[in-house]
Image 1 (cartoon, rainbow, N blue to C red):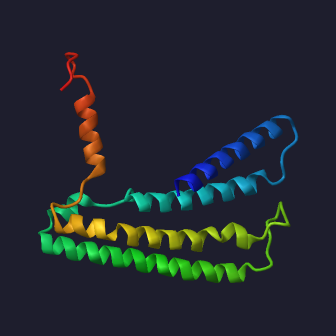
Image 2 (image 1 turned 45 degrees about the horizontal axis):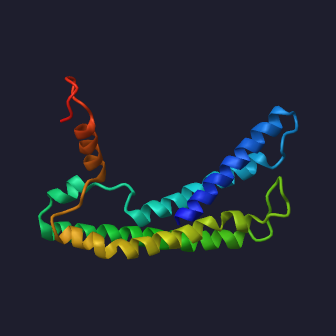
Length: 171
């Protein structure tokens, strides 16, 4: 996943630089806007799947940690079920969209099928499902144990501890 995200980031950077250079030279690339938009979408979808794999998506650990352990486990399981159902629906809907787009192509590059460009939706939905299932034992263990670690709070506290006080000495 990291390699895919890095390759997409590098490709998008090259596309944007090429678009800028060619436009500055007065030779605008007809496909630039369409491909850059698709590249940004792909980067967003694959980057989100990577975030899910790392457990870095939006959550409310402080609220869940305030629950008693039994309610914390139940709410965690319910949340995981809701997320999985959403991504199963997204996968099915994404596949239906691909069926509808059969035969359609990009406006600026008529040899490129919209099925290829929009395949990112069901593919990354499946990757999200896999990521959630891979992380579920870890998430359930945290819910059963001391609770979830708030990564943002931890990072903020570490930053405060590393920042010198007004007197110049570290805290």
